[in-house]
Image: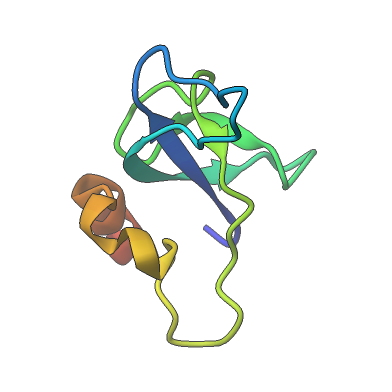
Length: 89
């Protein structure tokens, strides 16, 4: 897999509030990029969840060796997605 899209699984019923408070990120997932529109994710994450209700993080590592997930959210990364990424050729 060449391109991945990093997605945020948000707390249920959370939306950007009027005071600008960001919704709570429950988990960070990875999905393959759509071959026709690489910025769009495929319908399922690498761990098998539906990508439709998730938010695009627009995160991309800036240099080799950086993690696939935003470093500040390391404790919320999906370990199943990470295992699938490591197993990918």
